[in-house]
Image (cartoon, rainbow, N blue to C red; front, top):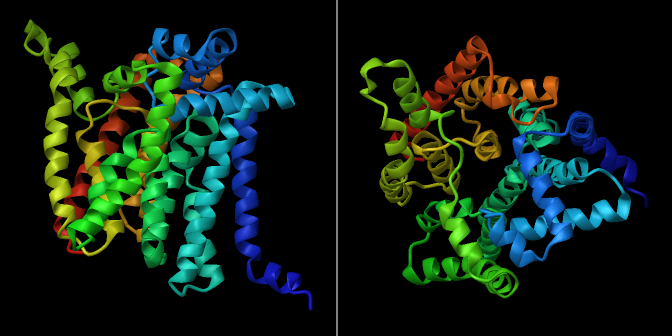
Length: 387
């Protein structure tokens, strides 16, 4: 008996949401080249075609993990295969990651006994989230893919108690693409009672990382380690670096002139100390989901630099948790991203976001400050909760 009509009827809403999510991402992804990230990665992509990998990785000071470099190689393969422009091919894996996250949210709510319509409505909160759309379709980066592997790690943790090793492996794969998932390990460790369980989780997390490191060593030498250690996102557009830059540029007598340099050099150690406190708090929480939200929001609050694409990481977890702080976060972040990307889209200059007219720059910084304060309040609320 053919059950296809019944399946389509049951899951019709989520299918429509996925189609809509694809459409509203695909159009701007194809029409617009992207942000400064797309510009730089296009240059590196061009270098990949004209030089050996060792030279590209070391001479171009490629500061991402080896998996990101191989990702560019995969994009190169598809560009040659299809003759589709680089910026379009580069964006679509992240778009598909967004769709996969949407479907995982839907499946998660079904697993929690929500009816299909209610589960679809929850999934739509991510599929149609303006911040997620702007980051994936306009910016051009891999952070939605990173968020997908982090969410997949949580999904197997939550709904596959016999497959928690898979959770560790997927988190490790995310770290191969971009090293950020390592900060989530305590969020999962805190729910394990025995040292052996924590040891095994860490070993399986390291498995894909170790494989990638060995391959990277034989293809790029030790340069990838030095480059990774140097990685730091742009400063001056978010949080403490935004405040320090404002004080240095607007308060007379040179009193704060050296503050931005101090923040850039030493804030990472303060951030690590704060995250250490947050990681300890993860061991007191009942749910990994709450711990993940706490780690990400605390990271946003204490991070010394700002990369717009980072702001997508927390969104699927906040949707899953039904956290009320997602609404103000989305509003402020979406305005910041719109003000960040619009000058690029209007002028075609990938560096336009760094040279805004005074009132537009002030407006973007103001909403960036609101978004940053929101993450501070959010992380504090999570820290005080007992979930």
